[in-house]
Every structure is written in structure tokens, then in C-alpha cells.
Image (cartoon, rainbow, N blue to C red; front, side, top):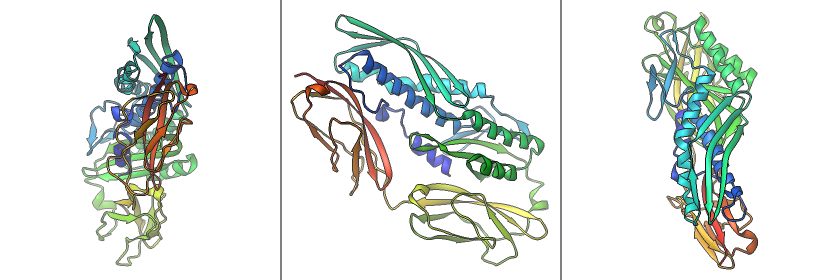
Length: 417
């Protein structure tokens, strides 16, 4: 399913030591407040984005309470459980994001090892974080820091990050679905969600699990976190033991999971017996024909697993929903850059570093976001620093394989001889 794959890719793991976050490039004199401030500021930005995505993909929780659905790599709260409402307040979601930041920001800063390895000492006090979710997501961090450099002592404390995410809108749209559930607790409000998605610029996927559980995924491509669309996910559990025999039409075809490749024709016939049914889909990938034929050409942006929901009806107004997983496969591998340890270079001395991949890939390209050097097509960095490059630099290195990308950070300190 899309949100599971997104979860695997997104949290595999930006907050780990392999993905130490930092500003794309900071150029300053060594170990000044600007260097430390930029380092912590971007750590806050990266951890805040991770917090928003992680918590949103778990229905607004960092620690998901019961009742909940345990999937392979994720646990989702039931917003409705046999008609009983369990919907978190916006204030509770803010608190859950605060807990995430407090737990994971230290992993980003890695005890300020990039500074300590260059001879500076950073002493950190107790962190406090306040999250406010409105028409933007505001993170205010209180983090007392002391930078010791020789006889100099420099103190920093307050950091702020505003994420361009209209959570007020997201929460309102989810609450609309909750309100519709309250009117009809044992029904999936497909009509309300479909209409809302067209009016409010989002897409959705419904995944029907066993035991009458439905997973709701709301996808907002207008909000980007890193290179991922913003996703909000939750689940509900129903009692359909009495409903199915009464209201479903007699659709006997077995629906199976499918897979297709990018730029190949993807086709699937949901009406091989040519029954007098009408078909309607609830996905942005394609438009199913009224007679039940699916045919389209997937693009690179569609790579991943999608749970496709189709409504089948007949002239008597009986209907049935069927779902299947459609996996779009790429012909290319996603690159994975190995961890780049903090590096030191000296003025007027050649600096060389080879960026490595976990698995070699042919025809891959590398990019950087610094003016210090240009990483070549094989991932080799080779340059001679000058006096104007003295200082602490945080550089983004990207590996790109036909649109499939991975990013790693290089911590580079340029010293005098």
C-alpha cells in the first residue's frame, strides 16, 4: 500500500546517524555562533518535518493508543471502532509531535560530534519544544547551548521553524469524515470523501483489511515534506457481518493484486464475464471504463504500491466495493549512499573523497549544492580549498538514478594549514 511504502522509504531513516540533518550549506568562520546556530536550526527543521510526517501517518500519534490496527511496519488508531469514536484533538496531536522532537532531535545533532572532532566543545542543556498547528506548523525550540572555544564562551538558546503546512485545513477535512461517520457509524463515507477531495485538492486511498477494517489515506501533493507528499492516515473498524449478504450484488469474479512497469501499458479487466455492471474507480492513477476495463501507461512518479478501490453497481441499485493492490515497478534501482563521516580539509592542500553507494549502479549521476567543488559522475570529490573557504560547511550530496534519488550530508571543516 502507498502509505506503507511511503512509510518505509520516508523513515528508513532520515533521523538516524546515516541521515544527520543540517543546513544545505553554511559558510562561516570555524566554530562561531553562526555555525552552531545553523547546525541546530536545520536539525530542528529536519526533525520537525519528520515529526509531522511520522505522526500524521499514524493518525496524529507518536505513541499510538488502543484500539488500533497492527500492520506490517505501522500501527494505526481506530477513529471509529464499532461505532465508538476515538478522534484526537488538535492539541493532542501537537503534544505527540513535541514528544517526537524531544526523542529524536538528539540523534540528529549526534551529541555535536562534528564540532567536537574539530576541537570545539558544545555543552547542551534541557530541551523544551512547543508545537502550534494552524495554517502553518510552528515549532519553537528552547535548547540552551554553550560553545567553548579556547577562552571564549558563547551561548545560544532559542530556535524556531515554520513549516508551510496548512494543518488547520487537513484537520478540518479529516473531521468532516469523522462527522459523516457519526451520522452513519457502520458505513464508509465514500461519497463525502470523493466530493471533498475534488473540492479541496487532495487525493485519497481506501484499503480494505480483514476483520472489517478500512485504512484511510489522505494525500496532499500541495504540501511537500522533503521529497514526499504529505500524507495523513487512520483506520476504522466496522461490523459488516449482517450487511454483506443483504446489500452486495452478485459479482463473482476473483479480483487479484496486479503489478505493472513504468512506461508499459498496464491493463486489467474487472468484467471478464461481460456482466451488465457499471464500474467506478476512486484513484488518480487511471479512469476505469464503465464496462470495467483498466488501461493506462504508468509514469515514474507512480512508482510504489497503490490500493485501488472500485465500486460496482447494477440497474437495481445494488452495489459492491472491491479493492486490489496495484504495484508500479520501475526499471531502475533506488540508490542508497553510504554514510559520510565528518571530514576535515586544509587550505591549499588537495582534498579527495569518494562518495560510495551501498550497491553500485551504472549510469547514475551525482549532484552537490556547494560552490566549493563539483562532485563528478562517479561520486569523486577532488578540490583544493582556498582561504575564503575556511569554516564549517554542511553540504548536500544527491545520487540520482533516472529520478530515483537518495541524499546524504557531508560535514566538512576547512582549516588553516
